Image 1 (cartoon, one colour):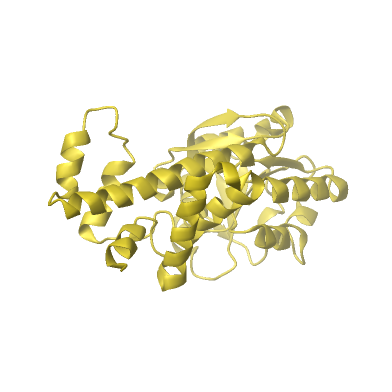
Image 2 (image 1 turned 135 degrees about the vertical axis):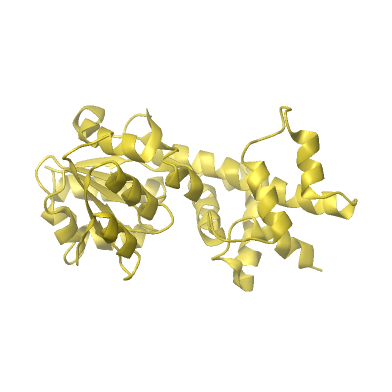
Length: 292
């Protein structure tokens, strides 16, 4: 793939950095900005342009990817001093790809519509974590004006394996919470199954060898069992962000109808309070193993 399209990436964390790297590798003119310094050095070496503000990053961009951690940070970067939206070109696309929940998504999209009507706002979180992002294998859960938003399709194709258009703004964020709720509960099941296997004298390899090839052998499980088995909790999805997504889902749905997710959130909150928030979500197995 080779393109002359200019794309700005705001936020170079676990997901934003590989998005930018894939865009650079596939020939896009990529402008990057991050709140903390140092995360763009390899990207600049590969050909990206470093910007000293969100406004500078987006000034010439046809597509802007916002991949930021919370609604508050997203609002500050997009609407604040030297914010992105005021500097964007007419009909440029703002793809808000962070997991900030439906309520914040609708509020910020409406604010953008009132203040910057020439900008096309897409609600486009992704299904996938660090490794799929590095391999350009995430699925974009897009919602908003598909016709006006098609400008972003080449960029979506460069960072992912496909795009699922789900309807009006807000639909992408709702589906993202459904997907992450499933992932969170699946990860807790993996954590607890690993502990139970160990209790009965089986290794994680033993467990996987029984499941492999059958309907219960979820591909996501094997590498997570390997992380638990080797005590490697380097971050693919940070526990603190998994907890954030669980709490968003519980806040925006009927929590009484989600008792399992509610209990998992309580456990993950305890592990986060114990100082494990920056580690991978598989670290909960270690936390539980050591609990009294």
